[in-house]
Image: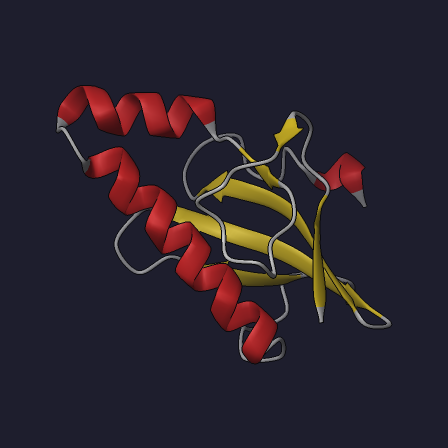
Length: 109
């Protein structure tokens, strides 16, 4: 399966595994975590990438969030990866904080 991000501001990052061609830099979360503890932003980024790898390997593992989306919950950070599957593609719709502005991403569907 291939991955595509639906979030704005997608940029290429060398740190991504080959299956992830574009990824959004989640500036607010990364800046917040780096201000609190050096290296925490990298751990957040790595967990997002690890979760994306799992989504590609097991796309139906996570529960449905709505009729067309699923929600993968990060293990160590309060974020969800909201994604949709269609044909041979996985669309990452949002990297959403669990307690802030619920469903801000709904217009991306």
